[in-house]
Length: 223
Image 1 (cartoon, helix red, strand yellow):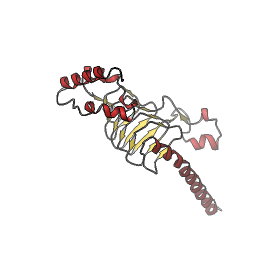
Image 2 (cartoon, rainbow, N blue to C red):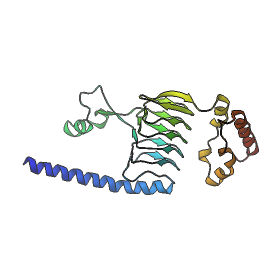
Image 3 (cartoon, rainbow, N blue to C red):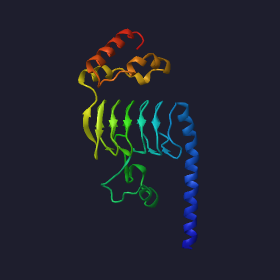
Image 4 (cartoon, one colour):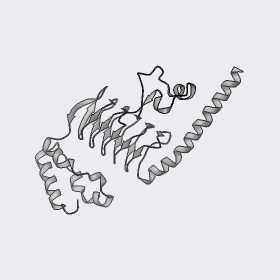
């Protein structure tokens, strides 16, 4: 009987995983429509909000989250939008819901602030974003980091748990860029801003800022 029970369990797992894979296909189709590339085989939560132009380059686990436009994510990335309630006697969600039949609000799983990754972020390989992580736009997350708290835009972060290493650009440059959400522009508008994307702040910060101000002045009515 134990052997038969084991076969039944294996068959159940096969059917469940097959159904989950089939459910993921329309999601990938929708992602392609928004110029989003995530490898087939990745888990994508149905409530994951992923904006246009995002690239994830290795099979990943994408839980419920918000990912901004044009993020460059090396992958594999783990986005875990919930956590185990450590004050409870049992941790496993299957046990608390199906064995002792607790309500979902009283199970061993909890959520706090969700996961937010701002637009135009560069995320290194093997990064984990935990419930409560919020990384501002234009930030860099170093390889292997585990992020569990909030960081402002233009942050360079890394470590376990992640900490602020430095800020990108100086204060004046961040002030100039902070209100220009170029990732919200249409493709033809982005092409018109080509001269700005060619600039390199590290070569001459003052020249970088003056070129930015000149560009904003010349295109004040457009953006």
